[in-house]
Length: 357
Image (cartoon, rainbow, N blue to C red; front, side):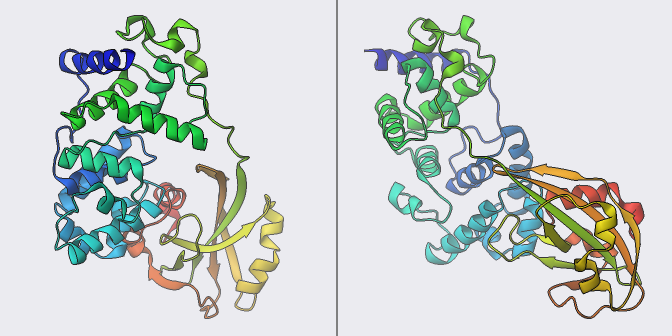
């Protein structure tokens, strides 16, 4: 009875009070639904909207995205982070264009087979694009269910995942799953918010277990985060003469794979400036040809999900041509804007353009 009451009241709120606006509401094109869901994975809606619109304008169909060059797509994605999503975006577009004749697969199982698509994204595409009865289960939905039903099981445990999925599927309004899924996500975003939820004016508060028992700030239950890894990146912006600089593409299975960077020295701790100047790294890479340090930046930081990157940028000018940086390639300074860089490097380049030839 409570389950039925929950869904009926939620749909009534959606029809009469939900004013949340987003550019993709009501969208049924599976390509556009998929595109927005990949962009919104681990991304705030406000940030994701701008990228969604850029991709739609540049690649209005999956076939056009499949034909695009990898560097071009990564450049458009630049700054959004979690770049494995971009790799999956490219792979999936090619699979659909070649293996499905440009038509997005229409069953939940076939959608799940595509790279980078898990149960949530498959449910979103299946319900929004094809009207199939699959409940979405994102952070907003989990928070709403945990609070309303007083669920004390961790959302990250195997038991919790099964419990939340089963409950979400039970509550789903199967006559219009897209309408219900959008409604419950909107409700979590604007009413049952992570902080300062609007409990006093919430139409569900009478039966909400978290509100009645003062558990609102305690739910949903999550495991403690793992200790954050701290890394130090020292980037050498090497002027090889005539305004040319050495860069390379990151190929290792690590953060920022497929993005570009300057000559990199990663250390396990902060290095004082005097140790940077006299380091074995500099002697090994630049000692034979000689160099002059022009500028050493302050420390910049970029926080990722499980690690913090501390970066410094060292501008140096070589006394003569360097031929031993075999992993790197020489480009003109005006070409720097053509390559996709991590946000830390792109921000530094923007703020320090006067230091480049």
